[in-house]
Length: 569
Image 1: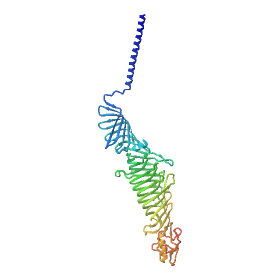
Image 2: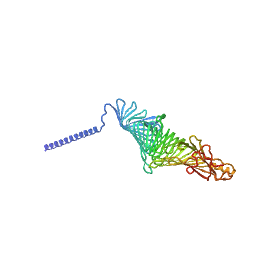
Image 3: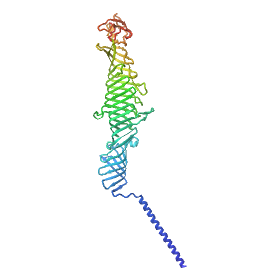
Image 4: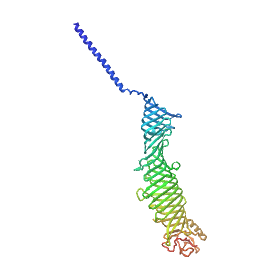
């Protein structure tokens, strides 16, 4: 009995020992497993070259109590030698000297040298240029985004620099270049060379899209505080059929970073010459240069107005001949959404000249202090032609043409002067009619002969398709009043003069009653010399109605180039 009980206790003790050993072994195994897990999760051992590691890093540059920029990193590793630190997930936020900026530079890793303050970011770098106000109201929507690589940033100067390719974009434009320098103090970015900029096409409210503007330049600077892009020359630009070349160009942007105003100049000390605009149209090429060009853009992208300021010179060559224009300022008003000229206004010592093609009417030269041109749709789609011209000040128009007389060709010069002139043009910009108002004078000169002059209150000249004038009509209210007064006093009225040329017509408008040789007021009488011989005055006299037309083709006795003196007192 006792022996059986002892055996049973022995079995219980063995079982308990085995159970206890299993529990101890399980606990040790569990601890070993936990240790292995901890080893896996534990950070790598600090290399011998590393001084310390930290989970975060930041420092700020302060000037006169204002923070210029702040550098932040999610992790920093400090090395023992060389005062070198590795910063990861780096953000540099720039506030500028006035606190109006919220520019950011972001990259994955940078080497930071604490003794010199230099940061070198060898990977891809994103630079976002944005104002503080826009960052609060429209974050990221009205920013300039710049992408590049291998950027260095200096803690002391607050400048970032790279010589690698750069790509940038903003809401209504995009471009590229080589190298960029950024100043945190000024909030400006400068592309160093080979700049290409495109103001992208945008839909307009009436349908279609505004034409893109493509620009190239040697370098470019963006000032975020005043929203300007400055391109340094030589600058080249193109929009549709127009091309621009200049020494420098400044593009002003609105609050939505859309093109608002463009100013093109000659650059420093005029090194690149005057800016120039060329336009290639079906009717011919137009060239315009001046000291400065100013272009105003509509928010939808099309050109509203162009100003050429200072020493303006323009020229055009086409099938009808050549024309040129000189002035101190020229304003071009454009058709909405079409980028085509509607009106042009020239001011300041205006000189306009047209040299017709062979056999198309000689040349014309206009001088005045203000001239306005109106354009209309041309014969081909998308083309424009000159429709009407008006002087806004006293003007002189000189016409030169070849005329045949007695079997030989002579150079004929006619000068028309008026307080105000207007002209209408047809196809190929050829003049159809000319009107002078409020005091007109016509002076005609032929080689070896005295000048012929006629004056009137108003004047109308009509031209044929070849450019020769065919009819000339004069009205003289001033002379008419004097003649009427003379008639009442029974004295001889003034004697107006007029010109007549072979195959051309001249019109006079007379007062209703004039003094005549019979001693009573009635219709005037006009004497036409019978020959063209100098010094002879014999001929026949005819009575003239109130409006009288003298036509050389209908009246053989009408001389080709003699002064006509109606009426006979």
